[in-house]
Each structure stands twice: as C-alpha cells, then as structure tokens.
Length: 268
Image (tube, rainbow, N blue to C red):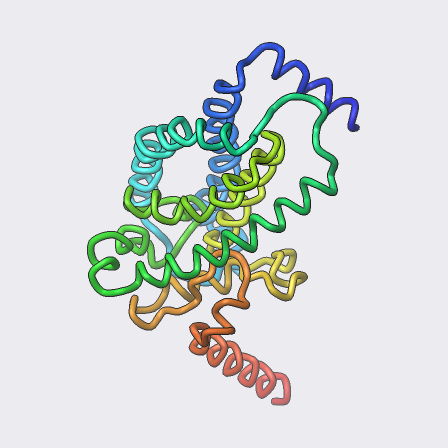
C-alpha cells in the first residue's frame, strides 16, 4: 500500500509544480470531497429516504438547496481559491514541502490530532463572537439561513465568515509547515467532519455514537434550531469547550428530558 501511495505521489511531483499541487490540487481535492460527501444528503431529503434518522422533520425547498449550491460555487472560486493562492508563500516559508520521502503515519496522525485541537479552540471563540448581536446580524446570519441544515450548508456563509473561521482551519498547518500530503489528509477529514455535523441525520453509525468527545450532527443541529442568543453548542468538532464554559446547558437539559421521556415510555 505504501509503495502504491509513493508511486502515485512521485507521479504528481514529477508532473506538477509545488504551486500547482498546493493551490490548484488542494482546491480540486476540496471541491471533490466536499460535493461528493455533501450532495447525497440533498437527494436523501428530496427522496424522503432514511427519514427515520432525520433530526428535523422539516425539509428545505428545492429552490433553497439550489441557492445554496450556486452561492457555494461563487464563494469557493472567489474566496477559497484566492485564499489558497495567497497563503501559499506563508506555508512555504513555514516549511511545507511536497518532496519524498513521505511522512510516516505516526507523524501525520499526530499533526492532524493537533490541528483538530487547535482548530476547535479557535473556532469555538470565533463562532461565539459571531453570535454577538451585530456580527450575527451582519455576518453570521447568512449561515443560519438554513435552520434545517444539510451537508452542503456547512460551508455556506458570508465571505467575511469564511475568512474569519477559515483561519481556525489553516492556523495549525501554517505554524507547523507539514508535508503537503498531511495537509491534504487534514483537509479531507475536516471537510468530512463538518459535512457530517451539518448533514441533518443521526444514524446508528454516526461517529458521535462511538467517540465520547465528538459532537456530530445531533449536537450541531441543536445550534441551528434556536434563536442566535440562546443557541450554544459553538464548537466545531468536540464538545468539551462548550461543557467547560457551560454553553451546552440547554442541549444537555433537552437530552436529559428526552431520556426521561423514553424511559417512561418503555415502563408504560
């Protein structure tokens, strides 16, 4: 397996420049993973399949979903891509490389865990600030246009928010100067995580059922359902920041109430 990956990587670095791989390659990888993982949730909602796992029974209109896709393409090409190009010199300066040898799985996994912790910390405070009155009204309300989220709404946001919270995602890699393959792997898992958190479904195989500190779709869906000043659940991936600062109290009370109701139902 390692030899296959190395052969494929050798082909890439032989036929494309560092700039092409880091900017255009990263953009194409992001678009592929994002839309291939997010689009199925649109079709699930429209077809009504797996409704028993849907967190909210309300559905988005086809027009609202189409608007989301159109705006996303605009934002990705006009905001995300230029940011990737502009940040390339910074990553190179900090030591990012694409040459062989490839980093070990131990190095990559350690760095990615570090990126998740750093991203979650920065995202929590940035997201909480965005829920102050003025910033919510003028910036963050765009993301909350969809009270019933679906996978692709994870990146539907005001351009200022894309830059503001996008900083949380790139800060960890920017200060460590990782190998490009580590950066790509981080991008893939981060995209899959945020799409899952916004998917609108809570499946028996959802990661939050197996990872105690992972928030997931049920945790974040609650955030979208409430009035902006009372929503809580500001973290992007884990739940400990909200627990430490008490911003998940409403969610915890609701979960406890549901558990009591289920227990009473079983007794009767």
